Image (cartoon, rainbow, N blue to C red):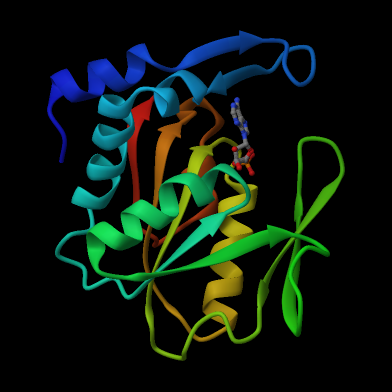
Length: 177
Ligand code: AMP
């Protein structure tokens, strides 16, 4: 995976923003990391490194910060890239699924032809919090016939136990809080 030093550098470029977007939430702002070429590369390389041996064919990036890491990780793995977006953003025929948010419900969708049956898929996002978004995306991948090889995140908010919503799925995160 990645060295302790790389991890330390990445962590040093993530800014905690208390009470954003709502009181009580500590938002993990990754924009300082993205602005810095060294940590941007370390993060993308670190995310790809965990799945180098898994013959990933397609990376699914979760809107919207999953798109930022998804495309470079796909290139590093020799895979293609596709999108999981919030409801109403994708043209053509789509498959959607609803999931619980902290307050209310969300809906995420993928294009019906986003992947071929049997394709080996990696799901990626910046943060796994409660796990609802990633679990919904994993469901879509499986309903579309993909073989889910795992899910990877820059940050896992481990105290929220989001990985419990991804039973039997390999979950990797570069940083855990
Ligand atoms: P969840 O479905 O609860 O795992 O939430 C995951 C999604 O919400 C990801 O797409 C994250 O970008 C975003 N998210 C949730 N909590 C945070 C946080 N504390 N800081 C930054 N992004 C977050």
